[in-house]
Image 1 (cartoon, helix red, strand yellow):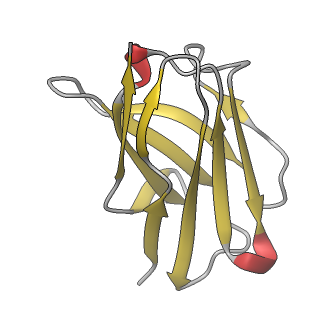
Image 2 (image 1 turned 30 degrees about the horizontal axis):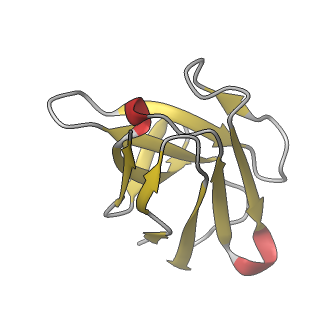
Length: 117
């Protein structure tokens, strides 16, 4: 059973930056696609970004492309999401997830990001 724990959320002003981390404390980390998702109040969970096993095959949602950067450090079993030029619309609970086959099977508990105007 994989355990994923997010950290790094908080309150930031519009235009500011945050870096989220996702640590895998149990189960395999290497060889799996990892991703970030977010869910704002009253909205469905949406895809933010994903990364292949060895820092290749990066994908981003159009809404964050050019502002967010996903990366991973396999030696530390940790994935990151650098978020720059944040806007109020980025306010959400951010989740990391691990993919098995075609399904996002394992999820963290989430970390809240709040952007004030």
